[in-house]
Structures are given as C-alpha cells and as structure tokens.
Length: 505
Ligand code: NA7
Image 1 (cartoon, helix red, strand yellow):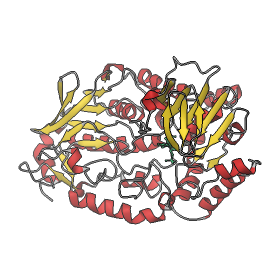
Image 2: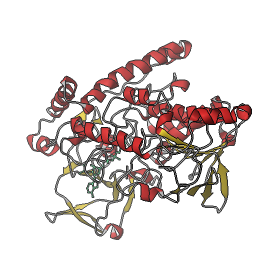
Image 3: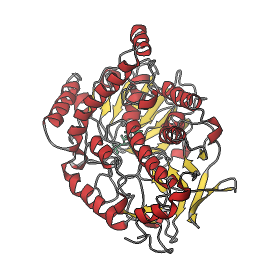
C-alpha cells in the first residue's frame, strides 16, 4: 500500500485536529442525499452543500407521479429510522405521501439553507487535495469531501421503438408522466410489466374505456395486501414512538425472509414461489393465465407486489397483449402479427438504466483517471461505498448495494454512517486524503462475484439487476452483512496521504 499509515498521520496532525472543520458537497437531494445531509448536521458539520439538479428534493418520489404509484416496500420500513412517521396512511404509502415525507425532512432537520436546487453537477476533479466541483451554470465549488447520492433508478430507458415519434397521441415515459393529458375517455397503452406497469394497470384498469398492456415478459406477483392504517393505530404510534420502532424492526425481520429467498436456495425461496403460483391460479381464464405465466423462477426479476393486478387485467376493456411490438404508427401500436392496437395515450413503463449511477457527471481523480475509465467494464466499487484512485469520495447506493427487494433507506443510513466515520477521522487529523486500494477492491469484488451463482437473480432471466457480463450487480448476501461490513473503516485497505501524486493504487 502506498502512503503513510493512519497512526503516523495522526501523531503529525493531532495538534490541530480538533479544529479541523471539513467542507462537504453532496450530489443529489433524493432519499440518500437527504439522509447524508441529516447525518452531517447531526455530526456537527456545518459546511456542507447538497447540489440538486431539479427544482425540488425527493429524487424518485419527485420524478415519478404516475397513477397508482406506491412504494413496493412497506412505509414503516421505507423511512429513516431517525425520523419515523407515525402517520403513514397505508401499509404501502402512495408516492405523493412519500414525497411529502422527504420534503418534511428538509424542514424538520433545517436543511433548506444547505440545499441548492436547479444546480446540476457536470464534473468533479480532485486536485491539490480537494474536490473541485463544476456545475452547469459554470460555477466551481471546492470541498474536502464529495458524496455521490445521485440514485440508482434515475435515468429512464426510452426504448427505440420505430415510429414512436409519428404517434398522433401523447406518449411519455412513466417517470415523466404528463398530467396535462386527461385520461378520461382515452384508450391507454402501457408498455412494460415491471412494478410500474403493474401499478398503473391496477389503478387504471376498468376506469378508462380501453387499456392495452404490452407485455414482453410476464411477472411473478406476490399479493401483499395494502391495508389502511386507521386513526387509532396512528394515534397509538404518535403517543408511543416505541411502537414505530417495533414495527420497523418487525418488517425488517419479515423482509429478511425475502432476502434469504433471493440470496440462497432454501425454504424461503420455495415458499415465496408457491405463494406467487397460488396467486396466479386465481386467474381462472386459461388463456389469460397462460399469458401471465412466467417461465423463470419467482424473484429472478424484482418481485412485483400487488394484491390487485390479476383482478385488474380481468376488468372490462383491459387486454394483455403478448405479441412483440413491431412499430408505432399515428393511430397506435402495431405488433409483429400485423395487428394495430389503437390507443390515444402511450405510457412507457420501460424502466431505468440501473448502471448509470453518477454518470453523465465526469469524475476525475488525482492521477487523471476518470470514472468512465474506471468503470469501462461496469460499475465496481470498494464495499459499495468508495473507489480506488478517487480519494475522499463516498458513494451512497453505489455498485452492488443491497437493493434487491429490500428497503433502500436503511442501506443509505449505513453507507452515510460509514462516510461520517471517515469524515470524523479527518476531523481528528488522522489523515487528509484517503482512497481504497485497488487490491482490496479487487478482492472484495472477486468475493462478490463468487457468491452470485447462489442468488435467484442468476437463475436465468433478464432484469435490471444484471450487468454487461450477465452477472447480477447487486449484493449477494444479507443487508445485515452489508451493515456489519461497513461498521469498521478497514483503514488498512486504504491508501492514506500518499507522499506524491500517482501512488493511489
Ligand atoms: P422494470 O422493472 O425495469 O420493468 C420494465 C418493463 O418494461 C419490463 O416489463 C420490460 O420487459 C419492459 N420493456 C422494456 N423495454 C421494452 C420494450 N422495448 N418493449 C417492450 N417492453 C419493454 O421497471 P419499472 O419501472 O417497472 O420498475 C423499476 C423499479 O422501480 C422496480 O423494480 C421497483 O424497484 C421500483 P422485460 O421484462 O425486460 O422483457
């Protein structure tokens, strides 16, 4: 390992350590960026700025406003543990309620003065011991630390369907829903049957004159009911906050069954598969059931949770179309069998580029290495949170984070705590610049890859979990193991304060 040891650095710098106040720039004011901001504030760090390219906070919950939007993780577990809301209206909250929660976080933790909206980061370069962050308005800001919190499912994938631009009606990606288009009396087409497509169909099926669902691959659906939290429950939670903590832990425990099911073969996997099969059997129409039957294992794609999808597709006016889309023409969608499916509005529920991460922001490390170079073979990080040759940079929701059918919120909290522990060490004068070694990063990634064959994501289906090489790009073990892994800083796996440029490896 190049560079001096932490202890040596500490003795050299401890005299002024107590007085060091770091400056921090966070990219993104979504769920993980706000989490980081609260953790910084609570750590007594005052010089931090969250740069957000949009004109509001909330990330996913700001961008997605489609009909029927709900989180597919129960609200009691999709919230910060440090800010538990007793008032969730339903077991699975609707999108606007979650967005309100995140806006509320800004007020409850007095973050407003730290957030710069409409400020898009275009480039960040580490030079002379600091990050220089350039924004689209031409300004450059400097900071000791850079935290990437730019989200996982952020860049919508708009498929290259021939003729799409010739369509006479309105079309849009579901993450850019055009609310100026009234759906009353409209024939609506939905392309895609991930969680988004399923939620839209469950909401609109039967309430618009015609709904055509263009399904390329059927999904396994777990029918988890979405009950309303009555007034008494909410009052009790408010009165006894320990109940919200109990509920959080209880749901976390239930989710560990799901996590076990996705990460290794066993009774959990069998049980969830059986529940999905039983749910499918509620579709009595043999032809429809055949169309909706997947030919891969349950959970290989992200498991869809819906108590109402199979009811919705049986409603009058709803059609599941399994012929592939050939092209779009002014009146609607033409499938490969030559049939024209006339629609007035076309919603593309076609997912996101889950491997884009920070990009198109260009990161440049002290050796001149760029993020595009570093990730030419696909996104790889050190323990999900850092990158070799990019010192004083921490990633939230970075490559291989445990996002497979789990709540992203506790993951962001663990990763933010890890970043804080490094920043605190910096404050104590233990180091000035630090980045993980390439060896430690390679070792860790080799262990990850070796564990992938056990996971359900590797059992033979296409999904946004898979990388270029066909291997899953998610965490193959339990989220608890991820939390344990980040409990310690593992300073021996870092290059700390190299004597000269160029020894970051
Ligand atoms: P997903 O889960 O990535 O689903 C995208 C869907 O769109 C999926 O059914 C795809 O079919 C389909 N798709 C993509 N491209 C096409 C084309 N060209 N033609 C037809 N169908 C297409 O995205 P979601 O927005 O539903 O969910 C994203 C996550 O958000 C979700 O996992 C939750 O965590 C919340 P395919 O299966 O690839 O054949």
